[in-house]
Length: 78
Length: 184
View 1 (tube, rainbow over the protein chains, first blue to last red):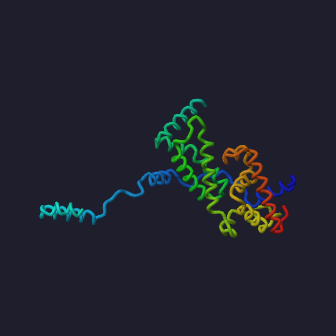
View 2: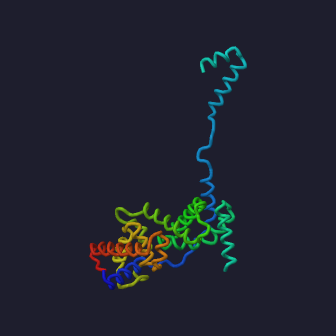
View 3: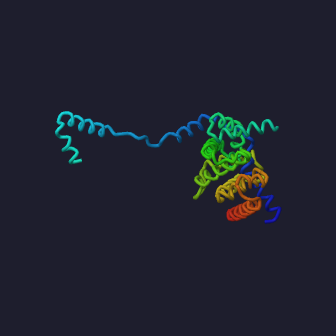
């Protein structure tokens, strides 16, 4: 490409998409940035025990209290 | 001023240590530079705002890798350029142009009246269809007229590589425009 072609292409580009004038954000971006960082620092999956596991553990504890003789049998089958 | 330089150095050291107040001070000081740089590349205020947040999020995540003996601004600009490049890669038009892309193209009254609106649309489309790396080099060098040294620093390449990208971008633009019957 020669110099005049380059100049012509540059003019075409600047006419189609004029240079951006200095702009500023329309809002304060800091709160959004803080939220973004806070969201990442939160653990993605918290360690939790489902309710039915608690119910099962409670049931086993009740059986152990009501029928202590069943405890060795329970461990045998565990 | 040496006092300001040492204060910034202190803030950067504290930021590396995870101090939120130091990070906010850096953000407040550099956000406009980063925003304007991204705006030059993506040419959309709302997207530039989102990418400014993305840039500082990446900066925060990479804070321990930052060499505190170096300047913060060029490092931030390089991360901003990468964020803009990632955005362009994801939003690159593969088949035709989205209608809203042409919102930034000036009307006949606002632009050079000798160049028709149709030609301007073709030029804008040709630019958007360039490979992202060439597009960034072309926009910054040919439209925004940024110094090649500055573009090289932002892209993390040599000035010679920038020149090559600009040349390849111009050749592709010319070929595309010639296919549309426009002789640049």
